[in-house]
Length: 280
Image (cartoon, rainbow, N blue to C red):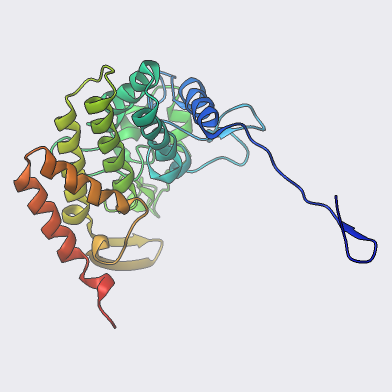
């Protein structure tokens, strides 16, 4: 209480928290223990999801009224946030059990499952794709997947709600920033990782390049009498959250003697930046 003026007073309300370092430790430990998908029957095993405090468990599409593919499909901002935080924390405060969880995420889910091993393109979701749909037929997970699909007028499964496309630019910075964090963990933490530091850096570079090269979209959507054709390149008109990590990646490429990759990425960034520095 603060008294002032002519017998007047006011209250100041403070919200106290433990020290920041303690919060980081607790948050990372909670993510490792609770937010990584462990169910071997789940098609997105080893990915991360949001935690529902009300239900006391990971979110899933069995919750009323059910969740969509962006909530539980292993990609998008919701599913990338936990491993992004976990990887950033372990640069400063490394813990082998948390790095092991990140290793499982990268090796058993992200690289080669959500992300193409050759092109480094990143799917918008691992769920709601016909590939996953067919692979999960006859399993427990199929009951969850079946509700996502829409049938066309002839009763055939339609591509209209297939979220496995790779042109969404917002997924790429999350991915290359996680790889770059793994590069720094492998280089400076002294903990064990599945790959060498420079390999993670190369993955970060390849993912960043995939954003600029492979976010070209072309779609002809026909659904119940509605038809629409679109084409373009999202990287020419979108500056997704997390792009601020690119200068650090460029600097690391230079420091590691990867000049060719550094120049290639820098020139691509300049090319795609014209939209943002020009006047209409």
